[in-house]
Image 1 (cartoon, rainbow, N blue to C red):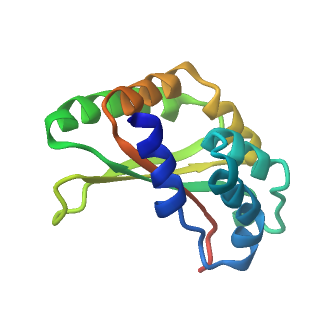
Image 2 (image 1 turned 30 degrees about the vertical axis):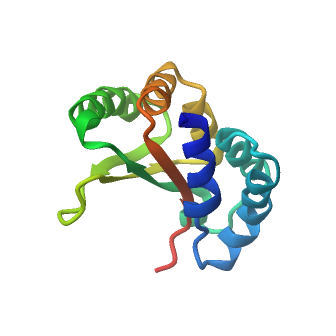
Length: 153
């Protein structure tokens, strides 16, 4: 169930920023997910290999992650996320990481993250603490949508 929920999330919920550069960078990867269900991490890392930048803002790597968390597991999710976030914030190259809770939605959580470079994000995805959160997501059927974004203004 967890794998199918994640695939549905990727096909139906992953969106690409209207910024033409981001859209161009990630459209192939997102189509690949729909076509053959490739792992999201593999797809993002593939996009990273082509991510370049002009000015300093374009060189950072930013993501928005949406989690749909069933009510019975929200407390466990928040505690795990906080523990993992402590380690992520200590990673070389992490500039910012936050978890948000929309006030009018009972199941949605939104995380935002910024890394100094695509390489720093790539290293982040290989960390043990990220695997800890991924296990919780899989075990508890939490739906995840990850959107790479770029600053516009």
